[in-house]
Image (cartoon, rainbow, N blue to C red; front, side):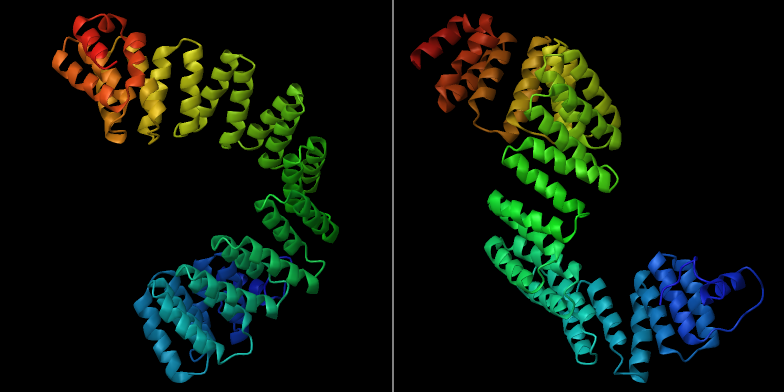
Length: 462
């Protein structure tokens, strides 16, 4: 049993907690201690669980179950040697106790010896009729080993024991998805639904599989049945909304997303999707209202800030776009997409130093796209910082060797600094990699393009 503070005052848990506040030691039978410890472990109150174990063993020193709780605490605290020693003692006392094998397997699992954990759990299977939890544990060990077929079979056995074990059902579908077995997942779910036609979770998962295959008509039907089975199933309404969006039925999608807002706390996902739907319907006022609601609900959701920024970007209201992307950066300065948008909008506002800073930050955050290197380097050229531009493009070559666009820029920069040998080296490289990009010299370095040395080299390659 599990305790609640709302239960009657004569419960062992209430008595135990009262005892802790006084110096009086009260007596509990071993089963009461087990229930108290189980409650604290479920609540994550490890210190109280340890107190209960100590007091329990003081009163019942021979209780194997209480000593097994002590093993569980040892494992939790990574005291695996102590746990193993105590388990060996308990095995000598009660070799037919399946919980000893479960804890032994837990130790092996903690040591990443998942194969041995599976073998021990299989021995435990032979000692009990309550196999559901054991199959689940064995399935999880197979998952640790990326043995998805074996894991799948274990979770199927869980579902055979209890058709409402939705955790097992989710794990089965996870295995199918990892193995890219969408058709097999659909076949399995349909078979399961033949026996359990009102299982909303199975209908929901079936709809997601059809969605993966872009069979939106069948996906919609599956989500309809999920909602018929449980008309408060928020996930089914959300998925149904996604399908309706794919079918360009945006008003109906909005209806489904809106239902989720009434059934549960508003989610930023639903608010954002409603905004996108209104945007598709050309209702810009309502679209941006829902984008605002999205970031109000979840200020850390980057998609919300990006939606607002891009909305104003499309409206050519770059000042507002710049304002909101700055707000986003103030909340999360490590978001690469924010900095890319910041740079693009800064350029449109002719804020070239800010744009260069944005591209530099983008690179520092590990976004090494070619366009980022080129954009930053071109801005440094525009800002009159040729040495910094050269350093930028030389770094870019480490990621994009034999790239003509970079080589022509390095050629132009070196010629402009009268580093003619270096300029010739990079110009020849550029011509060798791709002659079609010679226009870069004309556009970015018109003075260099008029140099006789450059003109002659370009003519001989025409």
